[in-house]
Image 1: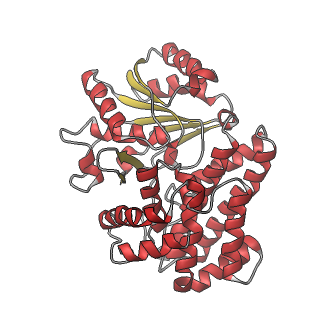
Image 2: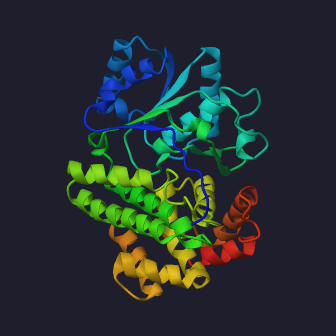
Image 3: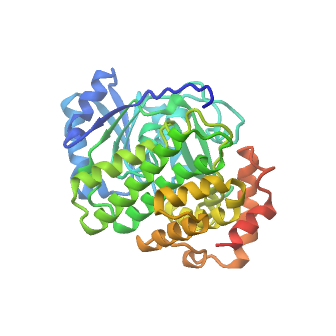
Amino acid sequence: MNNFTYYNPTKIEFGKEKENNIGEYLAQAGIKKVLLHYGTGSIKKNGLYEKIIISLNKSNIEFKELSGVVSNPLLSKVNEGISLSKENNIEAILAVGGGSVADSAKAIAAGAKYDGDVWDFFINKAEILEALPVFTVMTLSATASEMNGNSVIINENTKQKYSIASVLINPLISVINPELMATVSKEYLAYSAVDVISHCIEVYFTASTHPNFNSAIVESIIKTIMQTTEILLENPNDYDARAEFAWAAIQGLNGLTPAGTEGGNFPNHMIEHSLSALYNVAHGAGLAVVIPAWMKYYKEQNQAQFKRFAKEIFNSDDADVGIEKLESWFSKIGAPTTLKELNITRDGIKELATNANATANVWGMSELYSKETIIEILEKA
């Protein structure tokens, strides 16, 4: 196990009715004025919006609103939030929704304290040195954005889906009430499950050093996600399954699983971001297509870990069987596993590879994933 520093400044408030305390949490942090950031209106239909407003008013928290975040959050919406925050002397960003809303909020938080173009952070032209504090009330678990400093945004003008990472944009407090997630569609539950699994297996398979303890954590998260997903597809109101899914999802990308590892990277995310950027594919749906294809390409480079995965997750001694069974499970829960299912033809592969290779350049992965290599992977999809 390598030396490492592990620090996560996010406080989790987990459980039933915790969202009713968000105003109190903000007040305790000394916040008096927030930007309330949310999606396309579902929180108004299910009553959560009213609960948030009551809580804010009760604690005398002033607020401005910015709605309209979509499943692949857009730079234009982030810029709108930055302008609102600067014009109204906003002191914190309150994200109410899923990972897309949280990601958008984090980008706004960073941009609100920066004089230049927030996209500078995404293309490594500038470093995040300060940010407004972020608070979240989550309505979906998948990205672990509620407990990490990551944000992924699409620049509609350049068709690039890039990311930033800084502990300065970790949420200060995240509220997670599994009851708020009961209305998530079966489709997006499946996509969420795939996303969580992808977070776990990226470093699991690609790290040059991956301690046994870390592998065991990853495997436990994956098995928990698979078990609870199947329960929730049958009974969306199973609170305990929903709670375990939510807590396991957070562990997948809050810094825990890669601590002490070395050399890992995120090729599946690098490739999938192009599917989202060019075809507006839901992130989890794109990952369900990319992951099996990438695994078939990469398996010979880490046979021991692929065999371990097959054994621990599917009780098989055959690495190929492990890949096949994971792909079959994706299909079983309703996720696509081919480009055809996403209405992407073979003619689109070259453009996808060009776009993904640009991301690989930004992420420092271009030597491992040339345009030709990415085409080879996508051909397997």
